[in-house]
Length: 518
View 1: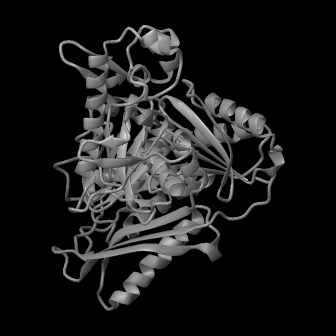
View 2: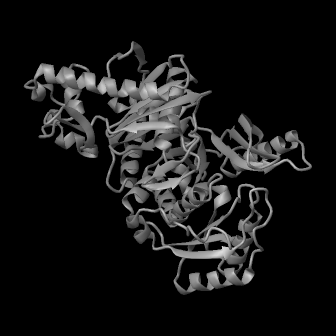
View 3: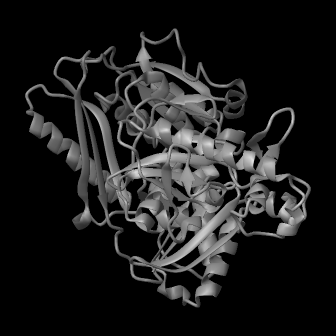
């Protein structure tokens, strides 16, 4: 039996599943420390189901811990940034375009060293061991334990990053090192930024993973822990410690995977309406469509793998204002919904109050919203429907209309038909689709980098990429005999003769661990 948990901004949802059957589900308020909310959700789930703790074989969690840490600028480790590029790139040092607030929080130790490669793989300059030894000495002096290493065009040739990491680890074996060729794509500054984000979260990743394991033990569950990645797959606890950045935007992808499972539709638009935001994405073959461009995370430009999702501040806790103009959100009462919304005896007019007044939802005390003007209520309902329909329309890439599946506890905010005649499918268990998406997840591995053909054939390059993606999936916790390739894309690189960008995605089933063993 599996437990799936998704920690959102307003609610923490949990489900207990065996194969395709949902045995129990709970929805609890997210707590300020998040982890205690997970304990509460687990306790309620086990109590309501009557299942013995020893029957649980795995626990999957989708978390906002790391995204929240970056956005708020809290609990980020001081990080050393080593760029291998001199004499090139000195005009734009690392983290040059970061928001001042985050830069001050991380207080980076910046090191520009010789190295790097041209776009065709030729070296810019040799790696200098003496420079890296001086870096190690400074890290030791200032007690800095996490390092981000980047090199020009390392997705074409990663050797220098790996050599630099070996030199630093030989001097300081305790270092947490993140290498840019394992994190981001072509584009030095954006890839380097993504690597710095991963590095500054490494200490927190240890703390969070240990906290989740302790939470499981607190309620008597001794089973392997997996966390959701932002491509709709899972990674085990140890992999999460190394790549916490891969959890970013895992909430929407969990909901999309859960929607595919519940609706039985592998190709559709998924609208996930929670307590704070509405996220719209597209499923292709049951997995979220990936964004192809840059992603802005907390004001930092990055280019690592992210789902193609559009979001607005519309959710069950969104505040509704009537003056000077009618508006819903983006401000939200968040996890204080059950204290501040009118239907729960509060004094804030929220989207949930509108849904109850319109007869679209049943929560709290409907008598507390009977005084609302019916005309105003209808206008707000129409406004919310228009906003959701616009997001779905923006996600279309062809003239063909997309089937629309609506999930999330806040999905009661939209009517059965959206403007434009789009029929809405709201499947059973829609309120906990995010937790279901976590529970049914497989373990994934992806490769997205530039290969140079040279003496090798196209098929040899594809085979190399496939094998690498499968190795990554196994290292993330997949059973080796279950891993298969689900997606392969290739495109020539115009500025690199003989260069081809290859993207491969592999998935596999969880490595089996008997119940009661971690």
